[in-house]
Amino acid sequence: MTAKASRPPQAGGHHIEAFLEMMSVERGASRHTLAAYRRDLQDFAGFLHSGGATLKACSEQDLRDYLSQLESAGLSAATGARRLSSLRQFYAFLLAEGVRGDNPSETLDSPRRARALPKILSEDEVGRLLGVTREQALAEGQSPAARARALRMHCLLEVLYATGLRVSELVSLPRSAAGRDKRFVVVIGKGGRERLVPLTPAAEQAMALHAAELGPQKGGWLFPSRGAAGHLTRQRFAQELKRVGRDAGIDAGKLSPHVLRHAFASHLLHHGADLRAVQQMLGHADISTTQIYTHVLEERLRKLVYEHHPLSGHGPGAGS
Image 1 (cartoon, rainbow, N blue to C red):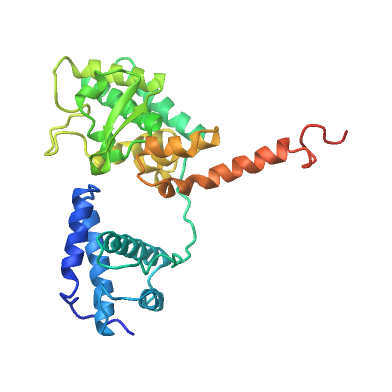
Image 2 (cartoon, one colour):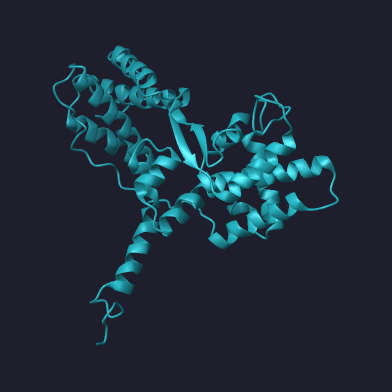
């Protein structure tokens, strides 16, 4: 069975629409996520149509043939894995709805791909970044506008490294985030899911100084801007972060707000945090998303065994 570049057929389209409606209403999937699911499912439907099969009646072998076709076409293993994930969820939905009596994707393995480890900063590099913003925020003799910008940037970095928020969650924090229990911040994440994330004392202090600089006005955003969004944009924050990175002697090419989110997770795990706790703070719906950081856990466990296992030659009682 070979895929054709023809427009996907309508057969099975109502099942796709029902699945997308469920993902939107019950799972809170974003518009972009729904569009990606639609593309994946319609591509597979077109592949099946070329061989006379349908979404409802496809077999496990049809799925295997499709994945092989993707590989032959030169698409990456990551793309194949994402498409298979879409199909798994789609067929799990059809099974739950009684449309099918089985899930033909259950026994399939995801295409193997090299695990891309996230870029992270060392603890020393993060310390240098925060040190630079702290010095700039507390510098004497600067104009009120410069002081306000410096306090805002220091608050952004302290809160980001303390919480691991997504950059979109950070820049859109409401002003009320600084007026509640200062030890925590309430975040509305993907799908409208709410989570409570603790703050460090340094982040609490930075937020208090920034909020005081904003003045007594109520409502609005914690990081207001005169732009259309009403708050600081992700792009502007990324630009300012690179400037701070240059001041701290850090290569701008390895620096982004998302890299600081990775640093938050990796550093926590390195110091013994539980993977489930990190998952909750990052706002990951699935633990498998957080498992990209298991390389940190593996390194820590190897060190633990090397230093403490009695048969390692370095643990307690070694050489006795």
